[in-house]
Every structure is written in structure tokens, then in C-alpha cells.
Image 1: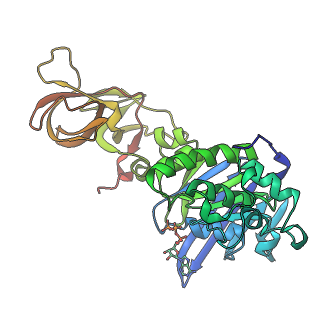
Image 2 (image 1 turned 90 degrees about the vertical axis):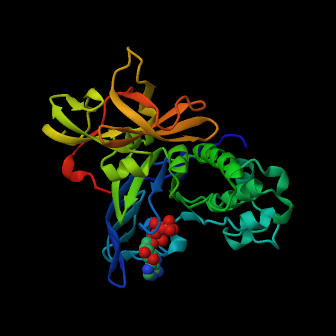
Image 3 (image 1 turned 30 degrees about the horizontal axis):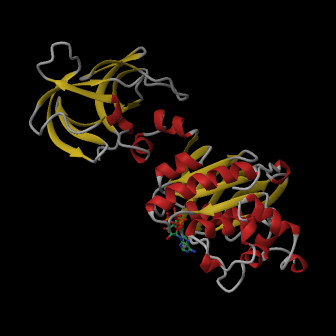
Length: 365
Ligand code: ATP
């Protein structure tokens, strides 16, 4: 990677407020509000078709909004009576395929979006290549580069015009699994070095958590939760978010004060911003990594009696499905299986405070 140059004057705050967009009467964005701090990276995480790309396109000016505003820095780009053309927004966009022009050298690719006199040679081309650690490659042709190098050049091309904001649409979807993991951590470092405000779209939870300083979870055209990755995972706003960002099972509970009684015993209730379930019946989120299994005849074991229904060993850890108190629960532990299907076990909760939801919020599916 190139030497670090943090040019915070480049970055700007992005404020999206109440953006609504329909296609043929179908609402695709339903009052989206999102704020991205200068120089930070937000991951828009959501299932296919929830409106992530449409939101990026509205920010880039490639789509108009039916209502709402997009403000970058102190400039209103989209708003009542205002629509700044995409080329005047100083918003860079990197698409899924990061495609380079095959007949142009690396330097010409990077210069492509610059004013005409600067396209063949300019300090901005050199600077951008240096930032992505590709300064020795200016005269190479794209087909002589590795996949990861091509992506770095595509990133250099996106940042060369010095956008205030960089938008990335599923930037790693075309890479194989190994390259994807390597490139995403390189790009993560690079975005931080650049200090550029960036928003990227993904439906991959790992990717969102690794790359996003903050994660905005999108469902059916709405942002249902925005927060640090650990907030989203530990304190999901809804049962749907809990299940979308990880394996989530629910056990019935009875809340009393700061504790909840469940078949796994009495557990402390996690503090959340919204009013907690005051008392009475609730659904309690249980993650597989928070459950431990012990042999049923282990005298010291606490928790609930259960029977192992399935065992999946994936080479590093084992996931069991255990039936306890009429509920199926997943339990994950490191290493090869210790219990066979049909084993009687005790299942106990070893996580910290648990997230509880009022019963009417848990989808029966
Ligand atoms: P994916 O992860 O599959 O790319 P996404 O969350 O990015 O999905 P969008 O591409 O924003 O979703 O699309 C949201 C919905 O809007 C989809 O139902 C899509 O078919 C619809 N849509 C998007 N663009 C248009 C358009 N130009 N005309 C009509 N419908 C559109």
C-alpha cells in the first residue's frame, strides 16, 4: 500500500433525510434517513431487492427522489426544487465489476474522469496511484494485472477526481472467496488512509462488519437500524435484524425487573435505548456461541435438559441443534463433535446480558 496521506478536507458529511422513491407505484425507498460522518465508512446491509442500490443511485444523482433531501457537506444535491447533475456532485461511484478500460494503460484509466488537459498525465494520476500502492504500474495494461491490482487501480480512478464521497456498490461480489477476504481488508485500510467519506452496499454480513465503521441495516426500503457492528449484533433493534446479522434463536421468557426467567435459567436483560420490556412474557434472543453443552450426567451442569438432534462439524467448530423444553436451539463450540445425535445433554447460557423482545415483535417464522 502507498504512504499515508489523510486529506480530510476532501471528505464531507453525507446527510440523507426522508428520501422516498417509487418505481411504477411500487415504493422502493420509504423515508430513508442516514447520516455519514466525514471520513467514515458506512455499510448499507440488506437482503436482495431492499433498495440499497437505489439509495446509492439517489445519492449519486443517477436517480431522482420523489421526496427528501441529499446534502453533502454544505451543498444540497437533491431537495425540493434542487437537483445537481451527477457530474457536478463530486460523488465518485465504484460499481460491482470495477471494470477498467482494457485498451487504456493504468495511468489513462486513472486519468479518465479528470478534466481533458489532465487525462494523459497529471500529478493527480500519480498521487492516486501512489495512494493505492500502484505507483510503478502506470504504463501497464489492465490485462497484465492481478484481480486485486485491478481493483486498486479502479479505486485510484474513482478517487482521482477528488470526490467528497465515494459510493461502492457490492464492490467484492465478483471475486472468489479468498481474494475477497484479502481485497476487502486492503480496501478497508485504504479508505481509512484516504480519509474519504464512503458508503458501500453489501448483502454480506461479514463484509459489512469488517468494512463499515457503522452499519445501516436496510429492509424493504427503510433503514431499520444504524450503529456500530457490535451494537447491531449485540443489541439488534428487531428480531429480524438479529436473524439477518447472525444465527438467532428465541426462547420464551418472563421478564421481571432486570432479569428474565427462561428454560435456560434466570438471565440478565441487556440495556437498550428503547423502553425495555417492562415485565411479563417476552422472547429472548439466544446466539449459538452463547450456549454450552455438558453431558446430562454432569452433576455440576446447570441449564436445561436437552437432546442433540443434529450435529454439523465444519472443520473448525461444531454446530449442534438441541431440543430443550420444546424449543430447537443451535449451540456452537470450537473443535470436533463431543456429542452424537440422540445424546442427552445439559444446555446452559454463557453469554452476557440477553436481548429481549416483546412477544408480538417476533415473527413466528
Ligand atoms: P440487490 O442486492 O439485489 O442488488 P438492492 O437492495 O440493491 O438489491 P435495488 O437494486 O435498489 O435493490 O432495487 C430495489 C427494488 O427496486 C427492486 O424490486 C428492483 O426491481 C426495483 N427497481 C430498481 N430500479 C428500478 C427501475 N429503474 N425501474 C423499476 N424498478 C426498479
